[in-house]
Length: 328
Image (tube, rainbow, N blue to C red; front, top):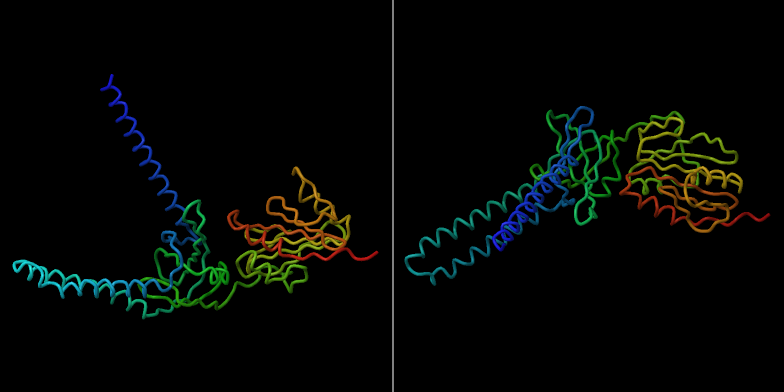
């Protein structure tokens, strides 16, 4: 019986190891798939989900200088080695010091040099890492005219929010590490909407840009509810057809009296378990839609973004300070 129990334990352990290996392989394949895409017939591959580190070459070079200096300090104590080991130890230490300094020189020279690349942004991509995918990393794919596969470029969140697909940009980056030192936006895509123009709604372009994390343009949209006004903010170059638009987008609906407010809220909450009525205080949320009583009417915001990036739309809705109703 003891032998059978031991055999069973080994079988169970091997089975668990096999399951772990298979699941690990699947996770690795899924991670690789998330870091690959095809845009306009061009294959794009993004690196591992690492953060934006423009000075990583400098710090790596200084680290190897420190390592090499510490190894070189061992030469002061080589006389303590047995006589028969001193020559070998000295040679090994010198070799290690030279290697450390050569690696440091490689990193420092790469950081000191700058190559300038111009091209068109094919797409933007946010990758996640860490526990529960809590850490965001911002990448862009730039077609600079060179043939072959395109390697993604990590950028800062601020630079990521300045560009959209179709924008022409100029990158100042290190040649080998491809670390971006500076990003210049040369041209944003032209509007694809004849009706696009200056914003004329309660949400400003700057607020919409922060909520969507990209430059935006304002497009009025027809509304079939009396005493209401609709608009949508989209990245430049995005076509809006009858109010329909691909992500990302921020839809804004303004109602100017209680009846119109209740009607747009009824449509927004149809099928939900809770209802909203004009006069309700605070921010009412249903999915990615936020409704606020705004004076005698209402303001409705609907974010059309990645489910992992709804935070900025929520922050916008909760940061607004609605006025009270007009006096009768």
